[in-house]
Length: 101
Image 1 (cartoon, rainbow, N blue to C red):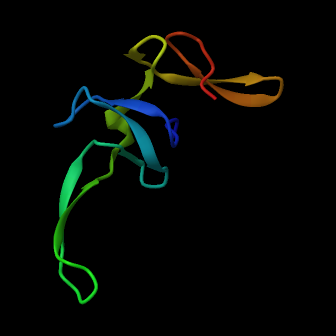
Image 2 (image 1 turned 90 degrees about the horizontal axis):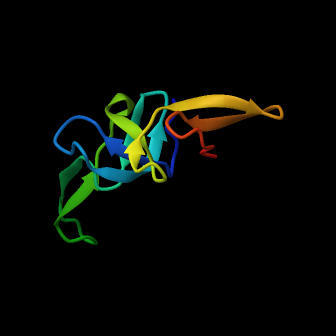
């Protein structure tokens, strides 16, 4: 999976199409990511002796194929490639050729 935590991504499909956000969590085994402010779901918290009842809003996971890395220099979505730089594998934005990491 080419998307990692703290990357800025743009949503390509779904109800949040066109929105950008930071990746909070990447789940490579499931092929999903959780993006800040995207796919917000409502969870009802039952009342307990210590906690009052409330309605929580939290981000849900979305498929990694529905997001693309957002290059802030080009101000556009771009694909990610890899190149070796002095024996170290580095992520590269395909559109501008700049190193991401």
